[in-house]
Image 1 (cartoon, rainbow, N blue to C red):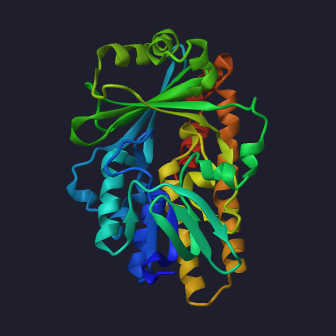
Image 2: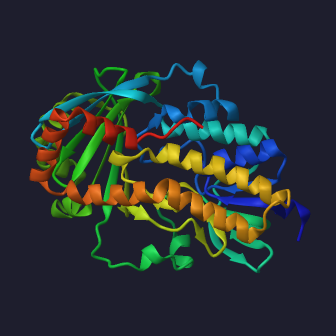
Image 3: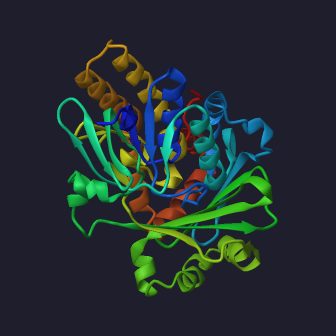
Length: 378
């Protein structure tokens, strides 16, 4: 094998999880290659609110967030399908930035630090012989000592690897995610989450005076209207008075909505066929109950530390896998599974209305729920 095709670490997927890990590895002096099926910059279905717990981490990687004039978000409004709303001050809060900007900045930083980043490159298979991985791609075959799966919510590789969640009951809930960028008169420091039948929609400001409007709903909603997104929005989402206002008054900046289907909420596995899974590849958390982007970055931070131990021969491959699996289970599994339960509960309109009313009255419970969705800075 040509040495130019051999690396210490190969990362499949160039989103937030994969790129932040690659940058850290490059800073440590390890050879790393990232395979990304798209070409930067590109949009992704994402709420585009990032918890402040990740701010210092991203700046340490080399992103000059302080110079980007990004909105800092400190207030939260949540409404029931009927429009009953609660308001809450966010202690830690977050900031708004589009994935279009964030991912492209991370990709640029990774390249500048020596990461080999192959764009427009699809991975067809990953094989492990007990010592090294062979990664088969549309741009050739590559060898690495470590392989990391950072391909996100779903991939053909999940089926190729016969991952357990791909074998589950086909009647289990699947969700659809839809995203727009819009222009509207909306406070810089506010994020809103509005419930509707079988789903919820978030809106908050990002860079350049734009706003992200993104929602997730049961796929049955869309099937009911024969795949007509606009009709579903009119007949379902706009029954919430907040959403009716935004959908009728906003200027929509995309020609067409950005959509992703067949989303499954729940814990997967942090290790699969000796591949270390990162971010959404290890578990999808419901957007309402946790910050998936910060979870992805935190897991890359921890995995980088473990890989450093491994390459310095302080731990074996088996110990590396065991420690990483234990980290994911202890740090994230309960949050992911709770979010799966919450996602199901939101299908019940009456229960959603009751929960909003209860949270409005009981401040300590409201504080506990909000606190559970944000981690500590790292």
